Image (tube, one colour):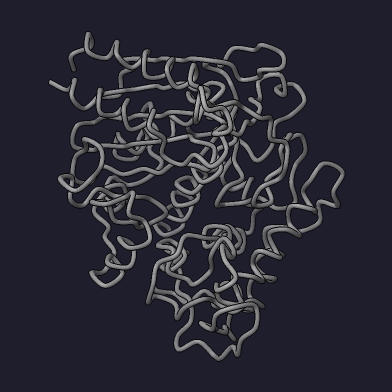
Length: 411
């Protein structure tokens, strides 16, 4: 690694905050298990002028999914969970699954041709989504939007906090899926259903299973489904970056607006133990904690001499692929991930030449709604973690530019 070239990363981060694309962010890079650089820029709390720091706690949103995937793999290794098992073997309410592909809020559900499999949850081929984005969406997606709205009410400040992980799965089982399981790809609540499966199989709350089997062994002391009072001063605030096109002299100029609402049933203040522990979006963490998790994977399932996963399991994560027909559907629905496939709640680089970033075949990871990002490259033993708290982010330009610098600096 040519460390001198990495100096360009700081400008990328500083430009990002200066242009108000985020209030603050940080980036950590390791190779061969050793830290080769850490960078930070901006503020975690604009109102109180608090700098974005290494111990800043962030909401992971969908970067919770890789953790849930590893939790499932632990149960796979023990023979307690099976990719090919029907979901109803673990959650009986899914036995009488309905499907409805009609457009609009009303339709005629029918019995599904086959049940949802555990692998459908891991690959987002279950038929459950994150809700409707237009009136022509199938009825089940409108019902899912209604359920998410109810969940947000339940988890907001002063809400009832009554809908548990298991209860959410029960309510989803009453909603018809939007396509026959295993025939299409659509990003959605599959990981949250998988969280309920993990609870049933392990006999533990999802938070307890993750704490005992993942967080404690890896020393992830700042990772959980809520932030206790003693750590609240380290929790970053969430902002929305808004473009203003009304000023003809500065068209598209951005400003930041504080965001304090629930999203996908995840509380803003993260200040109490939630009834709903979202396997798809619920965790908080720090950049160092998440790097421990990512390094465990980069190292083939081991961190600091402690083995969490078998090396073959980690290799499987890097080698898994969607079927050709499902890949076509993924490519249509996720064009920004051209060159990647999706399996086990992770993107996996299949054709690096088609990707919009420099990468290596088999590199895998994911991102989150607020901009956290992880990349794990087994071949080059390279690990990248970024965090920020900007609404509607996913993989940002800052993440792409930074990883391009990192890969082009590799010797």
